[in-house]
Length: 309
Image (cartoon, rainbow, N blue to C red):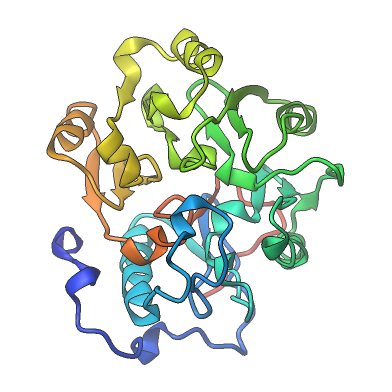
């Protein structure tokens, strides 16, 4: 695949091509079944510090390079899945990380309740988007923080939701998700501030496989993972891959799109039947996100949703 050779870090920088610039007059693109929600990086940047990755990065992100990297990821994903777009909004640089929009299963969506005040203005915008697409918005208690599919990951092979807590989502979040969606929800405590969302260190894959970084979890959570996922299905990554956000990956049609991948991890993913595709996302790493953070899977599009051209 040509995109395997793409490296936006060394690309010639300039204004994004006109074909990539979102038409501000157009409404949000409605998803088809099994779509992925993304948000163009029109206003992306590191404007504040709410996680360790943002330290010393305020004002350091290159918007042209971010656009090139985002478009490379989007075009790769679009070859295998429908892409829905939520319009970006000035003053909300992290809105590009749509994994934090909420969690959608079937026709029901839970909108995130952000812990950081800087991201709370995103909540009504994502709620409006879900409602416009026909989702029923589930009630979520005001006092319980929850950051969507950044901390709640579906494991279809086992019929469970893995839910991280400790840094962004509250300890009570798993029980509320289980009540709303009726899926067994397994709470995992995150203990390393660099891995502040579950999707930065934990990636359920098709066929019951799991790619994860054990050291990001407390001992009880590590034991829970081992008890549920058999050893032959666990792909444990080392610190180097973890710090490159290899676990912050988006899987579509057997392809795993990720920011970086060591030769060892690549070999293990291939042995498991997957095709790793490196899509460099260095600009977004400055804000603490990569491929998974930039995408929200909509596994079952709401019944009221109709595709748009």
